[in-house]
Image (tube, rainbow, N blue to C red; front, side, top):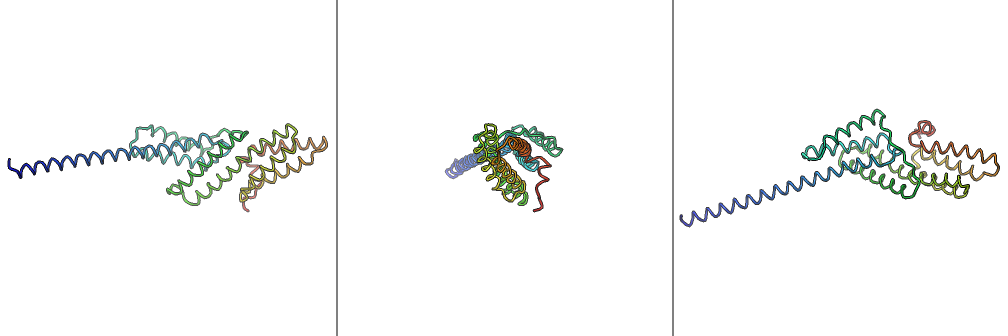
Length: 257
């Protein structure tokens, strides 16, 4: 074998080795990228599912529920395209069943009392995560600007209501303990929180009710007034507990303004 042939053979071996190494690296890079995408999509699904499961039922209206389901379905479709080993088919079937329940109004979520600063902070964090998720869906083109704006505005209102819920719970407790001045202060704080959503007629109706209740508490002097105040408190409690979902309460607000 002459020198030229040896050089050509060696060159061929080197070229083939380099090609094998490059192809191996490309396959590994593709594997890592696929794994990264699967992890990201799985995280998107889990976050949407967590928000749907953990946000108290009184905060999630049908629009927000459907947005979360839409996010879950999109994640499932992408995971299926990536041929993930995760139980994507079951996740998607569950999401579609939940979507049907929501549309048919068969998806009652359990209300949760906001009775401690810790619980208020927890719900606020969940709602802030929901806010970020809606922003991400808008940025990626999953929802249009009008839908994003409408739901972001509503979630911001819910964040204010979370704080108001805590103050209302504290005010009720103070009334039961006959600590009227503290109750008045708590209702003032609740009114201030709802006042941050001035463009929401429902929030303004709540502010008006809180102010009425404050005046009643300030006027508590006689036994008769105490009784009237107790009746008024019971009425306000019922209205506030069904604040987001009670049709009669909503009819009192002028949505055309």
